[in-house]
Length: 452
Ligand code: PHE
Image (cartoon, rainbow, N blue to C red; front, side, top):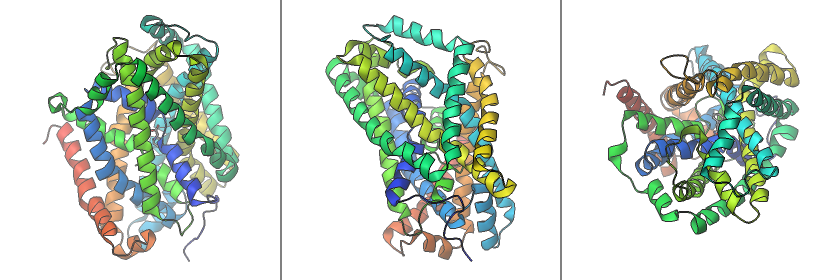
């Protein structure tokens, strides 16, 4: 008999699922990472590629991932082995779930450190440290923070504790409550920042940087970064969205909900870009600043605008919230498995998972100070983790999902779960999942390896 509910519980409504999935998707990826990688890769052309990957690869894979999760109704590891057995395939497909669990750990270990920066900035903002500051002071403030391992450890620890506490409380009273206020609040404050950037910043220059495509600035690696980021920002390829799908009621439409999540995620990223680049150019800064970009630019804006201390505090607080609702989804697949297979209590499972990622996080803390020269070929632990997860592991997970859902699972099972009938929509999705997404991922991989 097919399960109709997960043993871990179920979202109380379709809207809550959309909020939770949006909470997972919208995070540091949108506000911290998207602007700086767009900046490093020359803007417009990169943004266009990223948007192409979101809609041609990300959206269809999101639908596939939620579909698998809801059909299996367990942790991604067990979901994959159950579904594989049902379809007469080898249960070794559970390895896809395992790969996701490992990827989640790796991501969380650095995610928590960066989220820690945001936490630190909440306190900077409250303390009025942005008031009247210019580009040099903003730079100094950031450098002071990242060059101090003790401080970074403190914030990293605090953020990991926040994550563990929510996951320990479970789907309903933990995850749900956290997401309900975050997304709307964040959009409102981003809009206010875009408004400020439009009035006070070099808006036209910023806009042009983001949206006018100059393809000569792209190389194979930029293409890989754009695709990898599409996976990262939508939380795809590691089981986070799959496990959230396993808590979704059977009647809810997977296609509609996925579409809403993807749009929300994209809007937030573009708004973040529109808020940041006008300020970057007005302050005479370089867009290719790397990971410090928002921390070095936004304080300048807050420092100048009326009510900047208040808005600055609110902004970084919301950024912490955004990161928080993402980090909980990074641990959920591991926690669900520990509960299912090891009979562990949820609270313990959360603590164990968080502790492991916390230890690994030390590598990222040191990447910005003691080990900033790099550990292998001049690359820091942070660089390596970021590259391996976004550019390799997530797209690889996505590729395997398209093979499973598009080629190995029977069309009958897939179409039963999606409940779209044989509509144009269904056929379009099936085409994207069978051909466009896997071929796209494959080509980008070959391209980077220099084979194509
Ligand atoms: N989507 C999140 C962000 O943009 C990061 C994330 C990746 C969360 C993978 C879960 C799984 O910040």
